[in-house]
Image 1 (tube, helix red, strand yellow):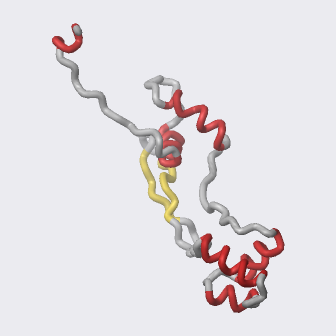
Image 2 (image 1 turned 30 degrees about the vertical axis):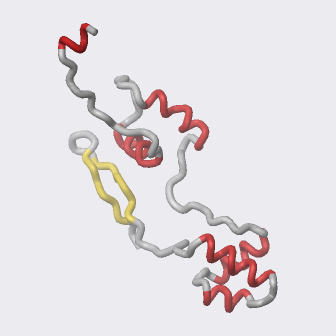
Image 3 (image 1 turned 135 degrees about the vertical axis):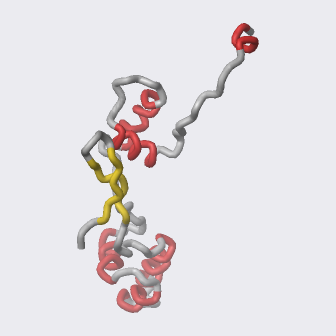
Length: 132
């Protein structure tokens, strides 16, 4: 299967992928269902095959989580390219209006992953208020 991309023109004549549209239903199960299924398999009230069918979790996923004793769901998709801690340190610098900021594509992805930031437009200030 080919990935599907929405394209945004960054510079004249060049196109870059803007946002990937997911086409699969991987990891569509809920973390709570995984925890319940793991508990029932450990208590031997259900076997792994039956629990995977009831809670709609792939059998191999259930077995992997049983073996690792891990009941957390991994995040699919893009991860921060600089690491979570480093990108948190960048947030104050991205708020400024420097000309030497990162490229538009990186900035839009960064803003998508950082919901605490918002692009705002300042409103006009009258001369009377400016003098105060």
